[in-house]
Image (tube, rainbow, N blue to C red; front, side, top):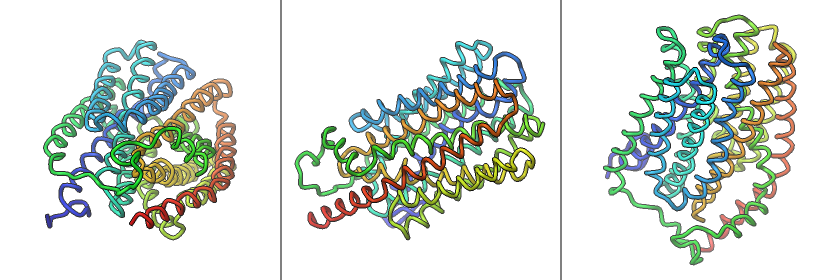
Amino acid sequence: MDKTRFGYTNVHNGTLFFLCWIAYFSTYICRLNYSAVMPELSASGLFSESQIAAVSSAFFICYGLGQLVSGAVGDKLSPRHMIFGGVLISGVSNILIFLFHTSYAALLLLWGLNGAVQSMVWSPILRVAGEYFGGHEKEKFGIDIATTVPLGTLASYGVSLVTMLFLPWHYVFLTCGIIVLIAAVYWFLGTGRLLPHLQKIDYHTQEPEKQGKALPLKKLAGMMVSSGIVVLMLSIVIQGTLKDSVTQWIPTFFDSQFHTGTSISLVMTMVLPIINVTGAYFARMIDRRIRNELTTSVIFFGIAAAFLAVLLLFGSKNMILALICMAGVTNCMFAINVMLITMVPLRFSKFGRVSTVAGLVNAMAYIGCGALNLAAGALLERTGTEWNILFILWLCLAVGALVLTGSCVIPWKKFVQREKLNEAEQE
């Protein structure tokens, strides 16, 4: 077929990418809407700051734990049905929050459920990428799919802002839930028509265990130790913490520190995802020169640490400078996210374990963020508007991640070179 779509070799591959993009993009609409309503929720007096933070953490912890399960089963079950179920139930859980928003128990349970079912989406999407896209197209898929994160963030805050301009805050969950339900149906119908026209990639592996079935977990574990991924997990925890925790607390920070009000806080927060779209492409540009995902990540951790140092020194005094620093940090984290959460798992496509590895690394990112959100809520409730304590914590984490990731660069380089050598021998 001569026709192309979104720069892929044929219209079927381009359409499959677009369906995956819509599915994952939609999950962000029902993920960050809670962050958008946090200032209004706090002002309502329904719940304490620690309770509000606990609900936020429930999502991240359930999402992270769910990744451990969905990542493993995602290499065995139908990715089409897993993604549909995750997106569909996410929409339903948000609509139920709209109905029971005054109950803390219901809010905690339903937001945790939202996190658990959304964990069923990312790992199967990477499995789809590994099975149907090869060579440079797989790399292109990994970079392009990363744009769902900043654009989904922008959409979530945008839908939330428009809804709150006309309706009470709890209607945000109804609006977002309906949009995501539509996306679930679109994914299911679209893939149903498309999949019969697609052909899976043949990696031409010589070992029987790699032909048609996944690498045994024992061998996978050994491979992850030797490649440095086990140590890298700590860096991934920090990356997830900085990426999502900074984004989560930005509206509350501007409202409490500069008294901007919820609407202005959200408008300012929406600047970040517009900038963050570039993070994935900056990462690709640098990685094409370095050819090592971990070295690229070290560079961006260093840049993020510099922005956090400036935020600590001057951020509480100047609103524009604070916004620039936070945009810089989240842009760096999105760049690192592409390297560690997308490109690293895709290296395991030929072993039939891309979903398992993706689920594991993504789990680490969100469990860490959930734990820090609990700490941040308790910290802010105790210290009031003393944001510098939180900024110091973020800075220390960025420096720690830089050191940890740097220690894994050489083992990862050897792993990649060894696998390329094996591929050349098999050819």
